[in-house]
Length: 157
Image 1 (tube, rainbow, N blue to C red):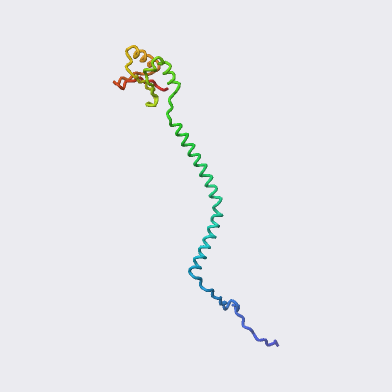
Image 2: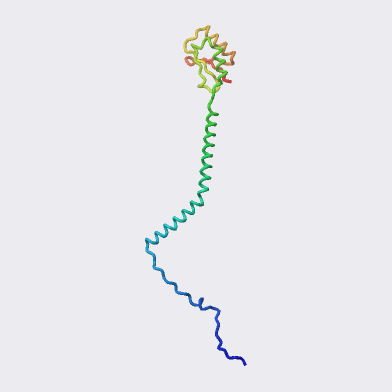
């Protein structure tokens, strides 16, 4: 018949898995050692973050410089555009037309954005007043009677 061999019971669990190995217990680290380990871990993570973000920081730094330059250029252009510049050709025409009276007249181009103000420095007299009024009317201007604040106005345009 068959040979009688002792039958070995087999289990689904292998002997290695059946009993876990007892691990040697490491000594519990002291509080100071735990702190040092945490600091070392943080240092390593910071180094990795720096490596990751260094290119981004460079890009953002360059972009911020460009944006700052663009904003400054726009602000400068806007400031220059907002400056009310008197029309020098019109002022020179007015001065040329009134050249014989420039010593008794004051020309103001800054008080009004649209008008050149012509104020007498002293009493003009009837003849000088009539001549100045005629020239101002020829230039498209008018006389403003306001007592001591009386003056002539000529449009800057």
